[in-house]
Length: 465
Image 1 (cartoon, rainbow, N blue to C red):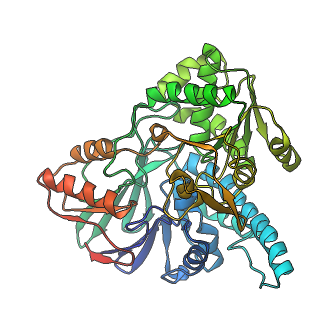
Image 2: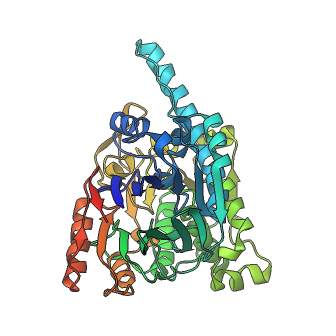
């Protein structure tokens, strides 16, 4: 049995891990790599293995950095089943089609410029037809139900508490008369977040693969976020500005809407319009509404039992139409615009940033992790100018950062989850999905508990289990 780490190895995007069991190839995740445009295109276009050689794929959750390159995988020859939870299957069906649509539109926009400058034209990684084709290979499984995905491998999904449908993955592998259990966190969530349930523990794990996005940082308590949002909104409105919120369409947007709903119910916010300007966010919110079985007890009691919609209230408007989206940038009224993508690498958020970040009255409210070499990270770093659509634009707007919204476990959460494992049985820990300093400190903290077999793979590194 061997495992090779091809994505999110000392990095946080493009998750992809390759497991080989007695000649059978299983892929854990197939995410889009996000970063410098040329490097990202090359890595996403060219797999470090033959896609036709993959027998089966397992997906922990629907975020694009974990699922976004599946259409390309299928396009290049993968014909096997893709196993995930039922809610993830529903989310992926809208997210991959949205990803294809954004790529097609961005390529169309860039090619107009290339034509004017006499530069070569480019093509999207995949199109809508590719995205729709791959959906036929998905199989949704209920939480806590064990399913055999090959003669030697059984998979079980437990709730990861990260986004709707997210799972920690248990793989029970039979080889040479022995069973080895691999536990893979995907992305591990936080307890006590609104809407979805807390992470469920793993048991009986021999090999543990953990994310480390916040391996050396702890979050502000989520309960403080309501106060922070109220302060940012009130301060920006007092100076006549807009609040621009780059937000992941899955999970983060719904959490923000939930908090805004509570604040409006309390009378804590000024009467400004709130726009969710992302067709994907609109579609994803509909998927949330279809899966109340994933909600925590508090959401069910506060909203559902009172026949309220947790994702809708009187000041909130969901926008699909492009013309309506454009009108937001010509309006001078104070408002909040929540738009995707979360790392500011594609989609309508780019237009809202381009039109608003030069005005010091406005605020960019950052509510999620921004990877290195993304526009979002450059905004977080408050660089004096940032490039959007090829133009350098001065960044004069206020930048407010709220890491307390993070759906990732922080350092304490990651360690707490690890400490619930059976150390007598656990043989090896692999740390992935984190920038080097985050992974390194998490590894050192785990070793300080007395467990020594910790590895932080580099991209392409292979291990025999």
